[in-house]
Image 1 (cartoon, rainbow, N blue to C red):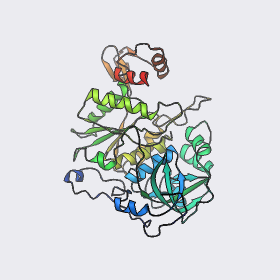
Image 2 (cartoon, rainbow, N blue to C red; image 1 turned 90 degrees about the vertical axis):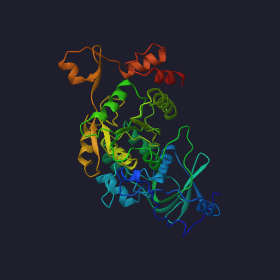
Image 3 (tube, helix red, strand yellow; image 1 turned 60 degrees about the horizontal axis):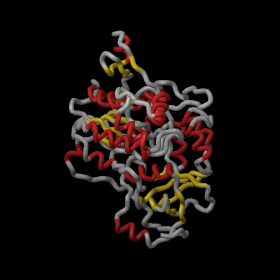
Image 4 (spheres, one colour; image 1 turned 30 degrees about the horizontal axis):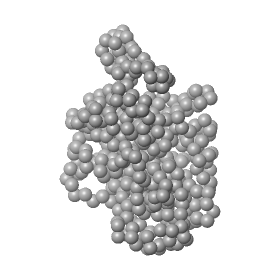
Length: 405
């Protein structure tokens, strides 16, 4: 396929392709958002037909590639392409599409190109791969000040997503339908929603645990204890579903985080845990991101979502102040959980005590237990210096991976 101008009138009038599995097991799982799981990948026959046509090439960033993959595999169901201007504006202002469906953050393709316009079919290229064909339906210049204020609650460049949309995203946004050709090649395999669903228990709750950092002891205690929450079924499982796409600049790279998860999954070998990876780029958008994560996890078959203090939050690197209130994400998620047919599981405030190991902070206080603490800053310092890190804080296998990276 070459970077030549061209159109495919009929082939790009794509109808939504849905997973029509007749597997009875899948019938016992929560339905995807919107009712059907979108699958935008074309058949091999159609792919061969498309190769005979010519397109303009449009290069994709790492973040673009994540969005394209999640659209193709149905993680953003019921979306069938990048949002048009009306839906973009509606999501920015109301956290809903024009049709009324909830969505935390807008999903758009960006470009500086003046030579791609509505009516064009463009080939989306990522690191020598051709991921998809975008039928451009709309092109506009967004008001990024309004987008920043509504989606992230600030226009400060100290916020990583405000900095991203201001300095990384291009001048124009593109909306239109997608035809999937290939998924990005990664060092780790990201299962599709359909694949994850096939490995979930029918008729039982599925609790999603979202993270973007290596999992330490407190995290493990948190998501395994979530299975005992009062609003979770007896034979429920937890889906540990870390985001492995771009995050904040100082976060551990996704390829390294993936290695820690693989080591830990093998070590604990817990039948109540499912492990998978999400090719999602974090925006650190607090409340809006909490909603986005819940919609995505529903599409992966989850009924519950663990959400705690300062989820997807971030701080000013100048003042050190948080951009969001501690429970803003939790409150926003709870406001919409009934509409999403999901439930939240509050993140327990666990602490490690000399006497009883991990307990809730309230329990430790009431019983005057001795709490042991280790800050993230101290942990990183000890990691660099080669000091022994206590196993009550971090799994040795995880520490070994981080030290060898």
